[in-house]
Length: 548
Image (cartoon, rainbow, N blue to C red; front, side, top):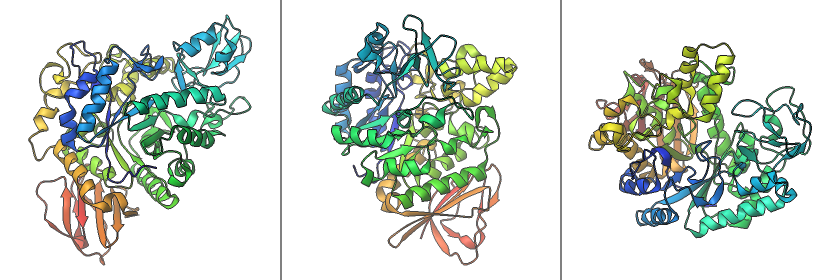
């Protein structure tokens, strides 16, 4: 497997990153325009979410052709130029491969609808009457996970939108088709792959109703998942590239296997347990205050568990499916700058590879839309209806979407204080946040105290100090609900990191035998260079990084 070392990945949602031709829709030439900015940030890989040909029912995660660029994003020549320009700047491109399902507009599915039995075997088509779905499983976007096709008298499985039909990985022909797609992009010079919801690709041998939940326990980390991943990696020789799997509702034990070098599956894993600590009773659509003790426990369990098992973490707060972290776990008003920096430092100094989602490095917030007409996300529009059916008022439903919608992170990148934030000269496909006049790259570029400057320091530190990528991690002060505290040790070196999770002063609660350390990094401008750990207190959302 590739050596992850001190690498940092930057995620780009092309549709919202930079519009180069004024149609309100971000594109590949727009990414090329901003490569010097990204190189200046210090990142090593650019993960681009799907730009393949697509009906855009799920913003590109419904792929109609894995080898063609959707004209809205540009051309193959544009992509080849992007790859070349990245290489000149020491960066690589990571593609987002959606291999659990295709769009129903894909040629394979269209042939299946025509009655071609070969291509029906590419998916999960089940015979049955219109009255009874094969199982009671629920789609992750709401409603049944099955759709009936009257002309065929068959149902097909879609764990996500009805236009996203699940592929049958049990069919070797399907697996060979997907391997050829990987080889095609490798030959173009792609340096990494992110695999969307990849731990859902192995479905059960027997189809049955779920009397306890929505069906996920039957297909999550399924019976042949490790076998399929090993085969894919071996036959496409992508073990020399950087690879990451998005793991839905997974377990620590499986992620150790997915990411352990000896297993020869993936470089690392995304898991989402730490981003469910504000789900009431585990329900994404029920709001509650973040449970920080649970957050601390989850980080300790996953960091130490992956460390002991030989696995590797993908470290992240934000992506195209998650709300903005400063709006979620920080304070976007009084302590906007402090909390954004603290949250960044907390995970960048842990064990694993950090991911930065576009705009996170300048502290972009949720947009706080006030009307359902401002939303575009299929999941959000579906759940708005569901919430109303559950007797929520329109105001209550909008409050929930304001905290949970995937559109919160998909608003256009805020480059300047100009109209439309410098993203486009035309009205964007999704309304930009009203605070783009205050929060933008231009305002932070030359400010040494900015959130952007703090991210640059974090990335530079990772490359300068091997302890960050190689050191062991140990958590302490677990009884202090307000403070995340951990140590990194490597050879004779030691770092200690304190993070105040609250908007109030807090004592770190350190035992008297601790000694004096030098401050390496902090998010408050005025603090002593030498810290006496016998009496350490933290200001609201403060992070202090100490070096032995």
